[in-house]
Length: 306
Image 1 (cartoon, rainbow, N blue to C red):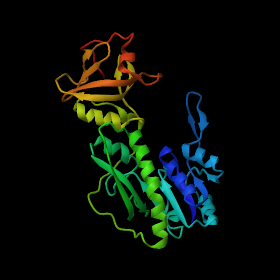
Image 2 (cartoon, rainbow, N blue to C red):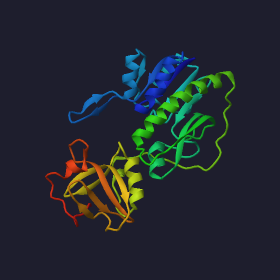
Image 3 (cartoon, helix red, strand yellow):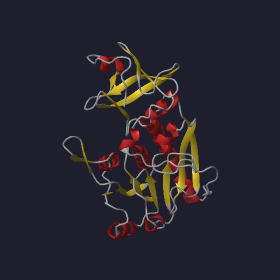
Image 4 (tube, rainbow, N blue to C red):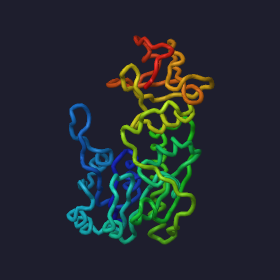
């Protein structure tokens, strides 16, 4: 099958590898333009571009997928189908209706739950027990197209957006091949979405601000859901620190106030219960254990996270 693949982050790498190993002809890979990164603000290629370069694939990086020149280039390729995995732009109707078999999207939720840009993060933050992968035939709505195949996975208390994303990427890669085979043969029939609709809006950097008035359990889910990006953060002694890992504890304490700062423990009050911080990241530094963070810092009970 002649395919064009749209994808950008690490989540989209394994499905691309699956296509290359599954006998399909990936005639082009479409990904986001290189972005400035790091302190030097040097241009950096996204993970999908790096993978495509390894395989010698044709790479297209339009600034906007609605550009007429880009759409004409796709028409000249004549793909049988388009596969989309976390590309980062909304495809216009001119692309959605271009290929004979349509555009297949790998979405990281059990649609119609968590339509939108950040389904993995919000499923963790909201305390869902399970999520999954949906392959769907795209239409012009926001993740509203008919379902092709679905696979579930449980969300554990230790899952972060990073660990869950990696697992869902593997599930998506495994589900993609039978989806395309069934779509081509007619054995997989698009089925309209049914059930309760929910949404997972795009996260911004400032969305990681910790609201200490929430319960300790809610804050743990929030921290996990924001890891690795944008990161859950708060201010302590005028430093913007990221909290990477924490566990909830019983007991009382004023929200955002340090209850205990010992040799290897940092316990903070919340709206309900207490939070024991296990890993933390000071500005400009690597992630470290709370024990390493406390060395050389004169933290004490009564100090507050702002």
